[in-house]
Length: 305
Image 1: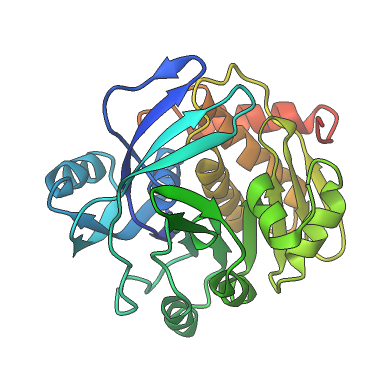
Image 2: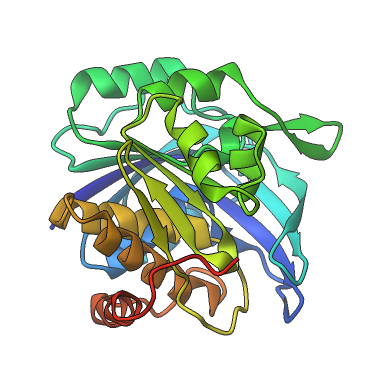
């Protein structure tokens, strides 16, 4: 069993899509969803984040029941978003709660196989990442969404930050969606995916990934581009697709780091299970992920722009 350590605050969201309206608050968050997927794939997820008293008991119950180890640090309140998706999967975010930053003293990164940095709203800083990097030689995957968001009143806006630049340079892998890639590179990935992911790679990581929702994803390792198709499903809720893609990437990369086509197709397969469901109870299994990966590998390997 591989140990995947994930830094990032858990959230309880309210979600509306063109085919679904959730009236309840749903467990989510980049690192949380990645830990959920890793556990369903047979690996050990370890979550480090902050949580308020309002959801602490619920969160502990949710994580314990799913076999996720955790170090939960007390915060004034638990984070959460209201998410409204359009037909293409683009979303409007509103704030339901803001948890505190993760202190740089947060521990738990001994004897781990992979580290995920999955902030949702600025809770990870470069000092924390420097301490992690100093204490483990495990690869680090950065999902930068929370480094590129800030509040303007109650509105969330996206912009380039110094924190992204510094943390990306310390990361082995940077995985950004199309909005995040455009924010940091100035290039629209659907118009020029290879140039966009190449510019993302220039921030100093070894492997750059741009995910393009229903169009697939593109990976660049400084030598070669890998165009990864999506596994076609009936999308119900895209929340967590990128998070579970990251989990699938980490799990398969630990097995076949030399075959990024296989790694990318496995990540795409894992994400596809998430988007045809909603919430933390998505029915992911290793067998199903392997089956969908094999289907992708047997077909044309390209984006569907």
